Length: 376
Image 1 (cartoon, rainbow, N blue to C red):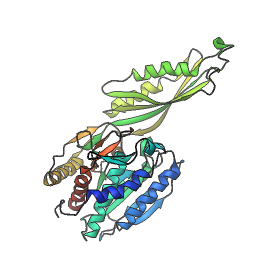
Image 2: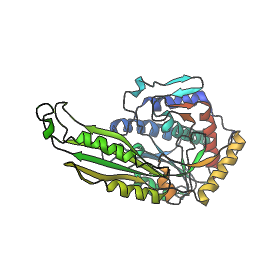
Image 3: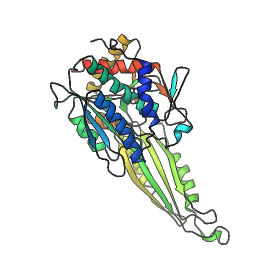
Image 4: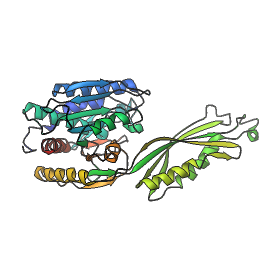
Protein backbone atom coordinates (compact mmCIF):
# COMPACT_ATOMS: atom_id res chain seq x y z
CA UNK A 1 0.00 0.00 0.00
CA UNK A 2 1.24 3.48 -0.85
CA UNK A 3 1.76 5.58 2.26
CA UNK A 4 0.32 8.63 0.51
CA UNK A 5 -3.01 7.07 -0.40
CA UNK A 6 -4.98 7.40 2.85
CA UNK A 7 -7.15 10.52 3.19
CA UNK A 8 -5.32 12.44 5.90
CA UNK A 9 -6.68 15.93 6.41
CA UNK A 10 -4.70 18.56 8.30
CA UNK A 11 -7.77 20.49 9.45
CA UNK A 12 -9.40 17.37 10.84
CA UNK A 13 -6.18 16.40 12.57
CA UNK A 14 -5.88 19.85 14.14
CA UNK A 15 -9.44 19.55 15.43
CA UNK A 16 -8.58 16.22 17.04
CA UNK A 17 -5.28 17.44 18.45
CA UNK A 18 -6.68 20.61 20.02
CA UNK A 19 -8.33 18.86 23.04
CA UNK A 20 -5.04 17.07 23.72
CA UNK A 21 -3.05 20.29 23.81
CA UNK A 22 -5.68 22.12 25.84
CA UNK A 23 -5.62 19.32 28.41
CA UNK A 24 -2.53 20.53 30.25
CA UNK A 25 -0.59 17.63 31.73
CA UNK A 26 2.55 18.55 33.67
CA UNK A 27 4.42 15.53 34.97
CA UNK A 28 4.07 16.37 38.65
CA UNK A 29 0.27 16.79 38.45
CA UNK A 30 -0.86 13.16 38.36
CA UNK A 31 -4.55 14.04 38.11
CA UNK A 32 -3.89 16.28 35.11
CA UNK A 33 -1.84 13.59 33.38
CA UNK A 34 -4.60 11.06 34.04
CA UNK A 35 -7.11 13.41 32.38
CA UNK A 36 -4.85 13.45 29.33
CA UNK A 37 -4.66 9.65 29.41
CA UNK A 38 -8.47 9.60 29.37
CA UNK A 39 -8.51 11.57 26.11
CA UNK A 40 -5.89 9.35 24.53
CA UNK A 41 -7.63 6.18 25.67
CA UNK A 42 -10.88 7.34 24.10
CA UNK A 43 -9.24 8.18 20.77
CA UNK A 44 -7.33 4.89 20.74
CA UNK A 45 -10.52 2.97 21.52
CA UNK A 46 -12.40 4.79 18.78
CA UNK A 47 -9.58 3.78 16.40
CA UNK A 48 -10.37 0.15 17.27
CA UNK A 49 -7.88 -0.70 19.99
CA UNK A 50 -8.36 -2.77 23.12
CA UNK A 51 -7.49 -0.48 26.03
CA UNK A 52 -5.71 -1.27 29.28
CA UNK A 53 -5.28 1.36 31.97
CA UNK A 54 -2.20 0.83 34.12
CA UNK A 55 -2.27 2.59 37.51
CA UNK A 56 0.40 5.13 38.33
CA UNK A 57 2.90 4.80 41.14
CA UNK A 58 5.50 6.90 42.94
CA UNK A 59 3.12 9.84 42.81
CA UNK A 60 2.89 9.94 39.00
CA UNK A 61 -0.08 9.42 36.72
CA UNK A 62 -1.07 6.17 35.07
CA UNK A 63 -0.31 4.74 31.64
CA UNK A 64 -2.38 3.57 28.68
CA UNK A 65 -1.59 0.42 26.73
CA UNK A 66 -3.58 -0.12 23.53
CA UNK A 67 -3.46 -3.25 21.42
CA UNK A 68 -4.99 -3.36 17.95
CA UNK A 69 -6.84 -6.40 16.58
CA UNK A 70 -4.64 -8.64 14.44
CA UNK A 71 -4.52 -12.23 13.26
CA UNK A 72 -1.21 -12.57 15.13
CA UNK A 73 -2.43 -10.75 18.24
CA UNK A 74 0.00 -11.35 21.11
CA UNK A 75 2.98 -12.17 18.91
CA UNK A 76 6.01 -9.86 18.58
CA UNK A 77 5.17 -6.81 16.52
CA UNK A 78 5.56 -3.03 16.60
CA UNK A 79 5.50 -0.90 19.73
CA UNK A 80 4.70 2.81 19.43
CA UNK A 81 6.06 4.36 22.60
CA UNK A 82 5.29 7.92 23.69
CA UNK A 83 4.76 10.11 26.73
CA UNK A 84 1.84 12.41 27.48
CA UNK A 85 3.38 14.44 30.30
CA UNK A 86 4.81 17.89 29.59
CA UNK A 87 7.15 20.33 31.32
CA UNK A 88 4.52 23.09 31.29
CA UNK A 89 2.58 23.81 34.51
CA UNK A 90 -1.20 24.15 34.43
CA UNK A 91 -1.93 27.71 33.37
CA UNK A 92 0.63 27.83 30.56
CA UNK A 93 -2.21 27.97 28.03
CA UNK A 94 -2.80 31.55 29.14
CA UNK A 95 0.72 32.40 27.97
CA UNK A 96 0.94 30.11 24.92
CA UNK A 97 -2.67 29.50 23.88
CA UNK A 98 -3.77 27.18 21.09
CA UNK A 99 -3.63 29.21 17.92
CA UNK A 100 -2.74 28.79 14.25
CA UNK A 101 -0.59 31.49 12.67
CA UNK A 102 1.39 31.44 9.42
CA UNK A 103 1.27 27.69 9.03
CA UNK A 104 2.26 27.05 12.65
CA UNK A 105 0.15 25.75 15.50
CA UNK A 106 1.06 26.75 19.05
CA UNK A 107 0.40 25.30 22.50
CA UNK A 108 2.14 23.72 25.50
CA UNK A 109 3.33 20.21 24.74
CA UNK A 110 2.19 20.28 21.11
CA UNK A 111 5.68 19.53 19.82
CA UNK A 112 6.93 17.47 22.77
CA UNK A 113 5.19 15.21 22.14
CA UNK A 114 1.41 15.36 21.82
CA UNK A 115 1.58 16.13 18.12
CA UNK A 116 3.62 13.02 17.33
CA UNK A 117 1.48 10.82 19.55
CA UNK A 118 -1.70 12.11 17.95
CA UNK A 119 -0.54 11.51 14.37
CA UNK A 120 0.30 7.93 15.39
CA UNK A 121 -3.26 7.39 16.61
CA UNK A 122 -4.64 9.01 13.46
CA UNK A 123 -2.47 6.75 11.29
CA UNK A 124 -3.90 3.69 13.03
CA UNK A 125 -7.43 5.06 12.75
CA UNK A 126 -7.10 5.61 9.01
CA UNK A 127 -5.70 2.11 8.55
CA UNK A 128 -8.68 0.69 10.45
CA UNK A 129 -11.18 2.72 8.42
CA UNK A 130 -9.55 1.47 5.22
CA UNK A 131 -9.68 -2.12 6.44
CA UNK A 132 -5.93 -2.51 6.07
CA UNK A 133 -4.21 -4.96 8.40
CA UNK A 134 -0.56 -4.31 9.13
CA UNK A 135 1.90 -7.20 8.63
CA UNK A 136 2.70 -7.13 12.36
CA UNK A 137 0.48 -6.52 15.39
CA UNK A 138 0.69 -3.00 16.82
CA UNK A 139 0.77 -1.90 20.46
CA UNK A 140 0.70 1.72 21.65
CA UNK A 141 2.07 2.60 25.10
CA UNK A 142 1.64 6.11 26.49
CA UNK A 143 3.43 6.88 29.76
CA UNK A 144 3.29 9.75 32.29
CA UNK A 145 6.83 10.63 33.41
CA UNK A 146 9.35 10.91 30.58
CA UNK A 147 10.09 14.55 31.29
CA UNK A 148 11.60 13.64 34.67
CA UNK A 149 13.55 10.63 33.43
CA UNK A 150 10.83 7.93 33.47
CA UNK A 151 11.38 6.86 37.09
CA UNK A 152 8.05 5.06 37.44
CA UNK A 153 7.59 3.38 34.04
CA UNK A 154 11.03 2.39 32.76
CA UNK A 155 10.42 -1.28 33.58
CA UNK A 156 7.03 -1.14 31.89
CA UNK A 157 8.51 0.31 28.68
CA UNK A 158 11.43 -2.11 28.62
CA UNK A 159 9.25 -5.16 29.20
CA UNK A 160 6.80 -4.08 26.50
CA UNK A 161 9.67 -3.44 24.09
CA UNK A 162 11.10 -6.90 24.73
CA UNK A 163 7.80 -8.38 23.54
CA UNK A 164 8.09 -6.65 20.17
CA UNK A 165 10.32 -6.67 17.10
CA UNK A 166 10.46 -2.92 16.55
CA UNK A 167 9.92 0.30 18.49
CA UNK A 168 8.75 3.57 16.94
CA UNK A 169 9.05 6.72 19.05
CA UNK A 170 7.12 9.75 17.67
CA UNK A 171 9.15 12.30 19.61
CA UNK A 172 9.46 15.59 17.69
CA UNK A 173 11.67 15.57 14.62
CA UNK A 174 15.22 16.74 15.19
CA UNK A 175 16.03 20.39 14.46
CA UNK A 176 16.71 19.70 10.77
CA UNK A 177 13.76 17.32 10.44
CA UNK A 178 15.89 14.21 10.78
CA UNK A 179 15.07 11.03 12.63
CA UNK A 180 17.11 9.90 15.62
CA UNK A 181 18.91 6.56 15.52
CA UNK A 182 20.92 6.94 18.72
CA UNK A 183 20.92 9.06 21.86
CA UNK A 184 23.50 10.25 24.33
CA UNK A 185 23.58 9.05 27.93
CA UNK A 186 21.93 11.16 30.61
CA UNK A 187 22.27 11.21 34.39
CA UNK A 188 20.48 13.34 36.98
CA UNK A 189 21.80 14.33 40.37
CA UNK A 190 20.42 15.89 43.52
CA UNK A 191 22.76 18.24 45.36
CA UNK A 192 22.10 19.50 48.89
CA UNK A 193 24.11 21.98 50.92
CA UNK A 194 23.56 22.18 54.67
CA UNK A 195 24.90 25.18 56.53
CA UNK A 196 24.21 26.88 59.86
CA UNK A 197 21.31 29.29 60.34
CA UNK A 198 21.56 32.65 62.04
CA UNK A 199 19.76 35.99 62.04
CA UNK A 200 20.92 37.81 58.91
CA UNK A 201 20.75 41.20 60.64
CA UNK A 202 21.89 40.54 64.22
CA UNK A 203 24.34 37.69 63.76
CA UNK A 204 25.30 37.35 60.10
CA UNK A 205 28.82 36.18 60.87
CA UNK A 206 27.52 33.33 63.01
CA UNK A 207 25.75 31.71 60.06
CA UNK A 208 27.03 29.55 57.24
CA UNK A 209 24.85 30.17 54.19
CA UNK A 210 23.74 27.06 52.31
CA UNK A 211 22.66 29.30 49.43
CA UNK A 212 26.05 30.97 49.11
CA UNK A 213 27.75 27.56 49.21
CA UNK A 214 25.40 26.25 46.54
CA UNK A 215 26.07 29.28 44.34
CA UNK A 216 29.77 28.52 44.43
CA UNK A 217 29.11 24.83 43.84
CA UNK A 218 26.90 25.57 40.81
CA UNK A 219 29.72 27.49 39.19
CA UNK A 220 32.09 24.61 39.90
CA UNK A 221 29.67 22.02 38.51
CA UNK A 222 28.91 23.88 35.29
CA UNK A 223 32.61 24.58 34.76
CA UNK A 224 33.08 20.79 34.51
CA UNK A 225 31.34 20.87 31.10
CA UNK A 226 33.32 19.64 28.09
CA UNK A 227 32.37 18.81 24.51
CA UNK A 228 32.00 15.18 25.56
CA UNK A 229 30.12 15.57 28.86
CA UNK A 230 27.94 18.50 29.89
CA UNK A 231 26.62 19.61 33.28
CA UNK A 232 23.76 22.03 33.87
CA UNK A 233 21.84 23.07 36.98
CA UNK A 234 18.16 23.51 36.19
CA UNK A 235 16.42 23.61 39.57
CA UNK A 236 17.34 25.34 42.85
CA UNK A 237 15.20 25.52 46.01
CA UNK A 238 16.22 27.38 49.18
CA UNK A 239 15.29 29.96 51.74
CA UNK A 240 12.09 30.94 53.51
CA UNK A 241 12.91 34.21 55.30
CA UNK A 242 15.12 36.94 53.91
CA UNK A 243 16.30 37.84 57.40
CA UNK A 244 17.61 34.31 58.04
CA UNK A 245 20.89 32.84 56.86
CA UNK A 246 19.77 29.76 54.91
CA UNK A 247 20.46 26.42 56.50
CA UNK A 248 19.68 24.22 53.46
CA UNK A 249 19.66 24.53 49.68
CA UNK A 250 18.80 21.87 47.12
CA UNK A 251 19.57 21.72 43.42
CA UNK A 252 19.05 19.34 40.52
CA UNK A 253 21.78 18.71 37.95
CA UNK A 254 21.56 17.17 34.48
CA UNK A 255 24.60 15.59 32.85
CA UNK A 256 24.72 14.38 29.25
CA UNK A 257 27.50 12.47 27.52
CA UNK A 258 28.05 11.09 24.05
CA UNK A 259 29.56 7.85 25.32
CA UNK A 260 28.86 5.75 28.38
CA UNK A 261 32.45 5.97 29.58
CA UNK A 262 32.26 9.77 29.44
CA UNK A 263 29.11 9.69 31.56
CA UNK A 264 30.70 7.24 33.99
CA UNK A 265 33.59 9.66 34.50
CA UNK A 266 31.14 12.51 34.93
CA UNK A 267 29.26 10.55 37.57
CA UNK A 268 32.53 9.98 39.44
CA UNK A 269 33.29 13.71 39.37
CA UNK A 270 29.84 14.61 40.67
CA UNK A 271 29.96 12.09 43.51
CA UNK A 272 33.44 13.33 44.44
CA UNK A 273 31.84 16.66 45.39
CA UNK A 274 30.47 15.06 48.56
CA UNK A 275 32.12 16.49 51.64
CA UNK A 276 32.38 19.65 53.72
CA UNK A 277 33.63 23.12 52.87
CA UNK A 278 33.74 26.11 55.23
CA UNK A 279 31.48 24.28 57.71
CA UNK A 280 28.87 23.59 55.01
CA UNK A 281 28.08 19.97 54.13
CA UNK A 282 27.65 19.04 50.47
CA UNK A 283 25.64 15.91 49.64
CA UNK A 284 25.39 14.59 46.09
CA UNK A 285 23.12 11.66 45.22
CA UNK A 286 22.34 10.10 41.86
CA UNK A 287 18.91 10.26 40.31
CA UNK A 288 17.60 8.44 37.24
CA UNK A 289 19.93 7.57 34.37
CA UNK A 290 19.31 6.99 30.67
CA UNK A 291 21.85 4.67 29.01
CA UNK A 292 23.70 5.47 25.79
CA UNK A 293 21.87 4.19 22.75
CA UNK A 294 24.22 3.57 19.84
CA UNK A 295 22.75 2.79 16.41
CA UNK A 296 23.04 -0.84 15.39
CA UNK A 297 22.27 -2.72 12.19
CA UNK A 298 18.63 -3.33 13.06
CA UNK A 299 17.93 0.32 13.81
CA UNK A 300 19.70 1.48 10.64
CA UNK A 301 17.64 -0.97 8.57
CA UNK A 302 14.44 0.57 9.94
CA UNK A 303 15.84 4.02 9.13
CA UNK A 304 16.60 3.00 5.55
CA UNK A 305 13.02 1.78 5.18
CA UNK A 306 11.76 5.09 6.56
CA UNK A 307 14.05 7.04 4.23
CA UNK A 308 12.58 5.24 1.22
CA UNK A 309 9.02 5.91 2.41
CA UNK A 310 9.81 9.60 2.86
CA UNK A 311 11.21 9.78 -0.67
CA UNK A 312 7.86 8.49 -1.95
CA UNK A 313 6.01 11.06 0.17
CA UNK A 314 8.23 13.84 -1.16
CA UNK A 315 10.90 14.73 1.38
CA UNK A 316 14.35 13.59 2.42
CA UNK A 317 14.83 12.00 5.84
CA UNK A 318 18.31 12.11 7.33
CA UNK A 319 19.30 10.65 10.70
CA UNK A 320 21.60 11.40 13.61
CA UNK A 321 22.48 10.58 17.19
CA UNK A 322 21.12 13.26 19.50
CA UNK A 323 21.25 14.73 22.94
CA UNK A 324 18.10 15.12 24.95
CA UNK A 325 16.94 11.80 26.31
CA UNK A 326 13.84 9.88 25.34
CA UNK A 327 12.43 6.49 26.12
CA UNK A 328 14.20 5.38 22.95
CA UNK A 329 17.37 5.34 25.09
CA UNK A 330 15.95 2.36 26.94
CA UNK A 331 14.63 0.37 23.97
CA UNK A 332 17.61 1.11 21.75
CA UNK A 333 20.06 0.18 24.51
CA UNK A 334 18.28 -3.16 24.78
CA UNK A 335 19.23 -3.85 21.16
CA UNK A 336 15.66 -3.62 19.86
CA UNK A 337 15.52 -1.82 16.49
CA UNK A 338 14.22 1.64 17.41
CA UNK A 339 13.46 4.66 15.24
CA UNK A 340 13.05 7.85 17.26
CA UNK A 341 11.99 11.43 16.50
CA UNK A 342 9.66 10.56 13.65
CA UNK A 343 7.01 12.88 15.04
CA UNK A 344 6.03 16.35 13.89
CA UNK A 345 8.36 19.16 12.90
CA UNK A 346 8.42 22.31 15.00
CA UNK A 347 10.41 24.56 17.30
CA UNK A 348 10.45 25.91 20.82
CA UNK A 349 9.87 22.72 22.79
CA UNK A 350 9.96 23.34 26.55
CA UNK A 351 9.42 27.08 25.96
CA UNK A 352 6.49 29.49 25.71
CA UNK A 353 7.03 29.53 21.94
CA UNK A 354 6.41 25.82 21.47
CA UNK A 355 4.76 25.13 18.12
CA UNK A 356 4.56 22.70 15.23
CA UNK A 357 4.50 23.15 11.49
CA UNK A 358 0.97 22.29 10.41
CA UNK A 359 2.02 20.66 7.14
CA UNK A 360 4.10 18.14 9.08
CA UNK A 361 0.95 16.52 10.53
CA UNK A 362 0.00 14.84 7.27
CA UNK A 363 3.63 14.28 6.28
CA UNK A 364 4.46 12.41 9.48
CA UNK A 365 1.16 10.50 9.61
CA UNK A 366 1.97 9.15 6.15
CA UNK A 367 5.44 8.17 7.32
CA UNK A 368 3.90 6.30 10.26
CA UNK A 369 1.48 4.48 7.96
CA UNK A 370 4.35 3.53 5.68
CA UNK A 371 6.32 2.05 8.55
CA UNK A 372 3.36 0.22 10.03
CA UNK A 373 2.49 -1.35 6.69
CA UNK A 374 6.02 -2.33 5.64
CA UNK A 375 7.80 -3.48 8.77
CA UNK A 376 7.74 -7.28 8.83
